Length: 195
Image (cartoon, rainbow, N blue to C red; front, side, top):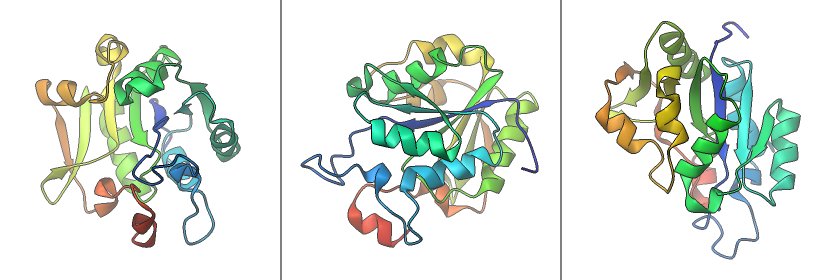
C-alpha cells in the first residue's frame, strides 16, 4: 500500500441484485470475474489498497458474502434494515464506524475502479475536502468521500436514494479522472463479460 488514508472505507454490499438474478438464487457479488475472483472481493481488494480500514456492509442472511469479504481483509457489519435501500445500509455502516475521520463509500458491484482513483479521493478527503467524488467524461461516479462533518446527515439516511440528496445540496470537490471503472457496475450476468 503506497498511501494509507485516515478515512474508513465503507463497501456497500447489502443489495439484493434482482436484475442479476430475479429469482434470488445467485448473489451477483459472489459471481466470478474472468480470473475467478468474486466481484465483491475484487472491489474490496482495490479499496483496501488506499484505505487500510474497510468495513463491508451486508444484509442479514448473507453469511457466505460476509466470509468472502472478511477473507478479503474487510471488517463486516450487518445492516438490519438493508431491505429499505442503500440509504439504510450507508447509515448502518456509518453507525458501525462513528469514530472515523471520514468515509470513502464504494459499491461492491463495481470491481474495476482504479486504485489510483481511490487514492486520489482519499488524499482529497484527508486534505480537508468535506465531500469529494470522481468524474469521468462529465459523469459523476463512485466511490464518494465524505468528511466527518457529514456524520449526522449520513446517519439520518434511509430508503433507496443513498446520499444523492447530500451530494446535490453540498459543496462537492470534483476530481476528473481517466477511469471508466467509476461508472461500470455489475447489474446483469452480461455485465460480467464487459468487466
